Image (tube, rainbow over all chains, first blue to last red; front, side, top):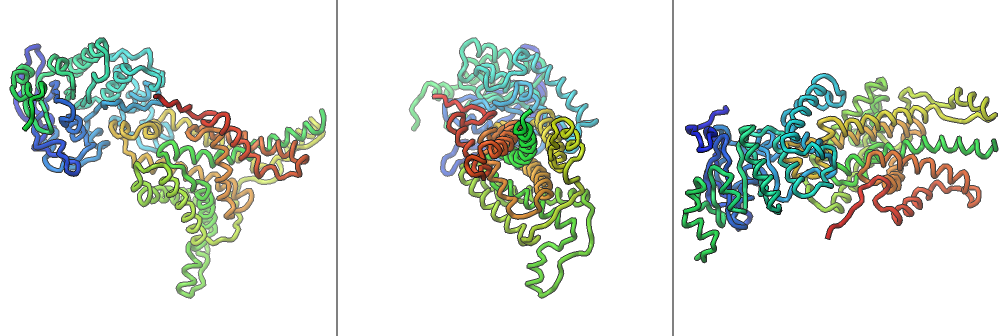
Length: 273
Length: 328
């Protein structure tokens, strides 16, 4: 258990990247006759920011959904912390420590920001139903401890001023940040971000980029993110997987990827035969 | 003080207590509707089924005895023991949890993401099935239910009001108890929903299934929990109604009274279910008292529905419901 393979190394800016946390082996995902992902393999290392990029319809979101258990691939294996992962429901994957955000934001609109972020703590709560109902001993202590952890994250992401506000009333940019807070509250071993900058203006994008970097730096959180905007990705990530039409066409550091001819073709739109 | 006014107060109090029972049934509806979008038409029948099972267990009745006797030519009806009320209530609760599990396993788990009308039809089917099952298990005769709740006129209130107004109020002890128990139950449910992990998870599932999954909430667990809670509320309602007027199949008709309550209170609001129930309870009693004599009485049968209709015209989301704003 908890074994990671591969050597660790130190990045140019002085962060230590550890061994492999998650490895996707020959993943193929089909919807009926449509092949969304075709035989893709890559790994995610401890403490890195790993990006998956590609044009529209490349299969990026599908890949994220495979990692988080929302989609079940027809072929291939998912290895997590040195063990092959059996078929799992999305909530089981979440409890294992893989937290995620959604492209279209999936928050609990009727609940306050604080309550939303508290739901992220569910995997750290063990008190049973009867203890909860009686509100005694363990349940109470747990609630207090979790509340502290949540307040820390709320401070970190600078959303103290809206703690009690129902999420439905918040503007788009703040909702994205609340969703990040909820995922972060799980203290995940991998944080999956599905287009965290989508639909944001330049200022919001800069804020979000800063938070992603800060989270990685401060908590050492491993982050895998999908992004459309190539510029943002190149600045943020340590390593990049490039997908096009369900296939992997590049994998490496931003510099390696940028000079890869297949990647350039995919983004500039060379005719496919 | 004019006599009419003093009588009015008595009618008001009695209405309040009838309203509490409406609220209880409506509460069961709201719990399930919030968490799964299922309009549980079977809530009233669940109250009946719970009451039937409770009586059956207390009296030591053999379940399916008619069926068994008809098939094997035997003559068994009773085990010959009596179970104390508290134990029977716990056992009945166990049956309601089992029912919650079965309902999810056999019906609603297969209907995830189906349109509301399909879920509604399934709930109607469940209601009829459950009514038939109750009949087959425990028989169709009217049964007396006595779990030890005090009944009859409350003499203290009678005396106090007599000294105050020169007219003693008739308030049933059972109604007082029902009100007290319902108030505690509602307070407990609200606190559970607002401040506990499972309550928060329940609200989360009600809000967004996908998001709930992504933070590690098992939908199946929450659904069974919610149906069990609704089963518990049904049991309490069944005990109150059953003690008051005997356990009989017309009990399932109170589910229909819960509909106008929900129109008033809003389908997704726990406080709404309570206030809606009280308004309907008080409203129909006062209306009968004031307007009843002018139109020949029997207004209690339709008052609630007309009130609901008026609400539908002017405030379709109910008193506490969330206003739906379509963005274009």
